[in-house]
Amino acid sequence: MENKSQKRIEILRHSTSHLMALAVLELFGNVKFGIGPVIENGFYYDFDLTGSSSKLTENDLPKIEEKMKELIEKGLKFEKKEISLEEAIGLFKKLNQPYKVELLEDLKKYGTTEINSWSLISQSKQIPKTVTIYQLGKFIDLCRGPHLKSTKEIKAFKLLKIAGAYWRGNEKNPMLQRIYGTAFFTQKELDQYLINLKEIEKRDHREIGKNLDFFSISEELGAGLVLWHPKGAIIRKIIEDFWKKEHEKRGYQLVYSPHIGKLNLWKKSGHWEFYRENLYSPIKIDEDEYLIKPMNCPFHILIYQSQIRSYRDLPLRYAELGTVYRYERSGVLHGLVRARGFTQDDAHIFCTYEQLEKEIIDVLKLSIFMMKTFGFKNYQVVLSTKPKKSIGSDQIWEKATQALKNALEKTKVKYEIDPGQGAFYGPKIDIKVIDVLGRAWQGPTIQVDFNFPERFDINYIDKNGKKARPVMIHRTVLGSMERFLGCLIEHCKGIFPVWLSPVQIYLAPVGKAHWQYTQKLGKELENFGLRVWVDLARETIPYKIRKAENQKIPYILVIGDKEMKSKTLNVRQHGKKKLKRMSKKQFIEKVLKEIKNKK
Ligand SMILES: [Zn+2]
Ligand SMILES: [Zn+2]
Image 1 (cartoon, helix red, strand yellow):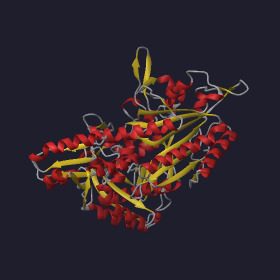
Image 2: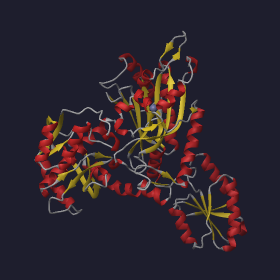
Image 3: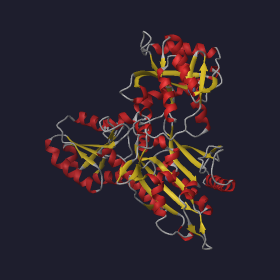
Image 4: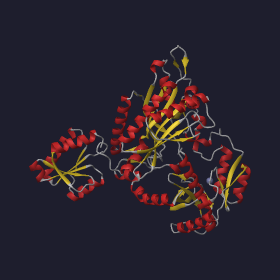
């Protein structure tokens, strides 16, 4: 969400959630407010109407929309005020807003409103003296902002649905009512989105993933944790094998690291200080505290530091499919796309400043190659530069930023610059892949880092025999295996190309007389490395064809008398009505060729 237009639309959507809250307040009177954040493609707000006589239903949405339009016309201002924490608690008590008071009390106690069970124990956050409140009409909200100036700027919005949601995602808390909506800068964009929405629902990876038996996420296991079922695991393995092969070709070395490491490592890296809300509680082993890893970087640094490195060793490129765990609020979890445990296709490159440009070029090329291979033709590229608060000299920043720019220009990649939006430790390139519906998904990221080499005191011996500081590149190409599969499912609607399909060929014998022949054929195909399902279920052929179509299997072969006698095959390709008759040899060659070409 780094780029500018993304931020603008988020401000618009978040401001629209305030407007919706005001409309609900005006229509229903006694409303208690939860929170109203921006989410992927829209916003929501949580309401508690138990104090008022009514309960929200879908029928109320048009009424609320009407009210919102009326309020837009008034050109209401979003008015910001900074008040003390104590004043704010008093104010929201007076307004009878217990949820806001709860947030403020947390802020007072822990310095954060985003608590998970264990951060309750750690009181290391700074307690703010003041908070900001925003007033829109008679609706006052506790909010960090920013917002639009006036409701007049809201041109195109739509309320989409109502759902129940526990306060703070905890089932021990009251159930609130959540209204989802979205907003765009123009009516045209909104209309297009609403048309797409139906298609988006049909492509929901959570539904498809369930129907095709790819994965599951259950309450019993724990929110945000993914079980990969055999069929999903086949896809993942193919992607992983391909990924490893392509990395080894490009001079990466594969490494493995454990799931936990001493807390001290994370103190050294700064994660403990700056990233604590996303970390899980430390665990004690013997006398030391350990942390479940949120990132792989410190482990790769330790591998680098296991030997004295010379300039002749650089660049060193360590790649790992490393599983990490991060705390995400339950409200933002979304299938595979936002999970609490996920496997990054991670790599860290240690190089000299002189080598930076060439390394970035290679990562860019690899990224584009990967995206193309998986069928993503369009992408957006953003280069984020030095922020106000940063470490490293201007000279180093200049050098690194120039290296990134040169790399982008030499690879002829069109890009936007997002000034001041780099991480405090270095500039970066973010690539968003655009799916068939025009939606942007987080894709490859390439991040230059001056910070870790300092913090961990990473060295190499330069040409003059002196200690020198290398620079680090953190990069992922697919992001995470989970998110990438989610994105891929929605992009291809579950209809995977042959090379990725868990089952490539479905064999349906017409009757018992054809079983033996079909099984033999199945074995033959399997000997070519093809993934085959010989279905001996006693079902009609039309039923079986429907079944295989629903399972999105690329090829369906019905085997009857004719096939047995003529030794030819009647080939039905997924989604195509026309059958093609061909010899077994022709068919095998065709499929193998498609797999080789990653079709
Ligand atoms: Zn706000
Ligand atoms: Zn890293």
